[in-house]
Length: 105
Image (cartoon, rainbow, N blue to C red):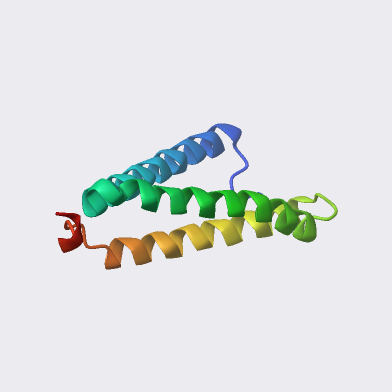
């Protein structure tokens, strides 16, 4: 079921995707600080809450889908998560407007 059978190539691809995700996260949080100014802490608190909820929900989803802990079940999980990340990143990049809001000043 593996798309990449060479472990070195798989590790390189994984590293590249992790770096790309890190850069996206950095831009996301920096944009939040720039847009919200002194209210960034409130928005960051909401980010933290959403992240915590996902950490609580994800194990339930994983145990529901990967009951037998097989490669095909894990492939479904990884493809769904990758799809969600790609779609939401594209939406963010298209719709984000990084300008300080009038209520910040």
